[in-house]
Length: 194
Image 1: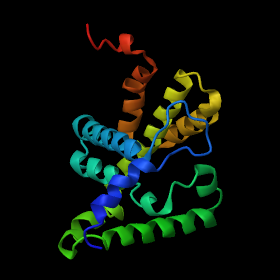
Image 2: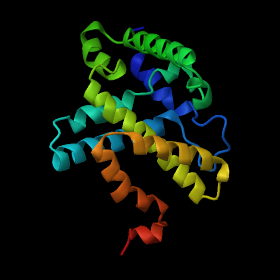
Image 3: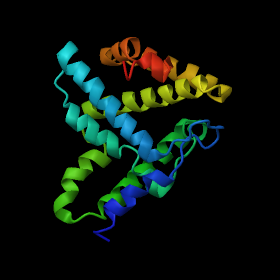
Image 4: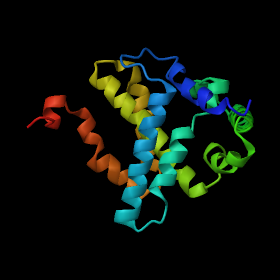
């Protein structure tokens, strides 16, 4: 069993996201985790460079890569169900935690400590950045779906933007103001080959 951890991690690519929605641009958990890592790293860099924060961008990126690892064992429960009420939310958190502990058991004992911080959200500061990046990634997905002509995500886009605007991290507000508008641009408008 101690050799199974990384083989299971590689299976994140088989777990689809947004299961109740008609997707123009399908997304799996592995793709999502990569984007969350990019965004968590960026938010932490912005926090450090512009707002004098001391959180580690590298720690945020690493935690983000594993933030949905438990879904390898649980699957991706749709948001309307997961957050329907406090009892379901708490129960699902317990299930995610149990799945993360199960994954940790699939590592040699000597490696578990390093990965437990990533899988069990041990650092509250890092977790705050990962959660913000997770919501930001979902919002960007909605923007991209709308841009592709898919109105299925309009309500989710509005709800996510409202959630993001309530987040107290100034680096998140900075990212939304300075970088999110570019997600509306075409490839030519992004100026890739000029």
